[in-house]
Amino acid sequence: MADIRPFRAIRPIAAKAAEIAALPYDVYNREEAAEETKIHPHSFLAIDRPETQFLPDMDMYSPEVYEKAAKLLEQRIREGDFIEEKEPCFYIYELKRGSHVQTGIAACASAEDYLKQVIRRHENTKPEKEADRIRHIQACGAQTGPVFLVHRPIAELRRLLEIRKRTAPVYQFVSEDGIGHRVWIIREKLTIEKIQQLFLKAEALYIADGHHRAASAVKTALEMRKACPDKKGKEEYQYFLSVLFPSDELEILDYNRVVRDLNGLEREDFLEALKQYFSVTKAAGPVKPRRKGSFGLCLPDGWYQLELMEAFRPQDAVEGLDVSVLQNLVLAPILGIEKPGEDKRISFMGGIRGLEELEVQVKKQGGAAFSLYPVTMEEIMETADEGRLMPPKSTWFEPKLRSGLLIHKIAMDGC
Image (cartoon, rainbow, N blue to C red; front, side, top):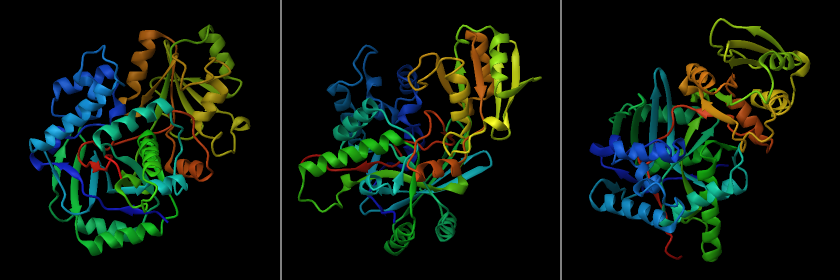
């Protein structure tokens, strides 16, 4: 049983939605975020990444930085860039990338469901990243970035949303990266109750993207519970901002690896080591794997096709993932990368950037790049259902939700 609820969104006025809407805060490094807010000063990124409003040597985790986020949000509300809904609503959020369309419900999901593992994760989180978002929530008194949740298809819900989508949206724009965004508001109480009833039948929800946003919202809720032990469990801080999509509408891209060197090996020795586990064939051009167990390898002298030998194909749900196979057979034993989430010799590149970018990196720094077949949604759900975690940087979802379109206000000034 998944408990979702409507909320009174703080949202942009329609005329400014396109310039305010921003990619998630963690898509950018500090330099990229600073440049983006310089080019687009009204972008919500300035609130999500308030260190961009200071000199580069400012400690991005200082209290003044989080206070700046709160002041910017208050200022923009005061100046009329944002309005607040009078009654709790659900919101339909449609994303379009090329011919691909996915339609979700923007709502608030339950912190208690997260704790009871009705909301299931497939990635680990880092305490320092959680702490950053906790301080941001506490300073702003709001959750500003939605968690990307997934549910198994609900036919009745799909029909309901498709009917509503025949009406005029409150927001409709195409962002600079070519993604189409449309938003509708559901205000009718009977429709809201119907949607809630449909989700009560869902056995589980799955975090696709936003593991740190979810964890920080839940930890904020736990802190507030301790401070307010007499509350009933339905306060706004007990829920976190989410957009819920059906699993069969999602697009997961490859999440590729770039390694700076061959761990002291010559090219011929490296290829020979790979032949313990893979058939290795020289390719005429970039290799985009078409099936599980197939990998592309880019070296300074060109591309190679790697096919995993059947004898080394694990049957385990997690160990059998291509990201696990690459880690366990190549990155750790041959290239010496034991902890890919911490090792500076490896970087990760979402498939949205294309295989050509892998070539650019290898030509610039040497080493090797690996192209992978994307993880599937079924693999993610199976891993999460087993209560297990995928290796770091396993999934890259496109298109990405925008921050700043819908904000969830929570009370942080006492009980």
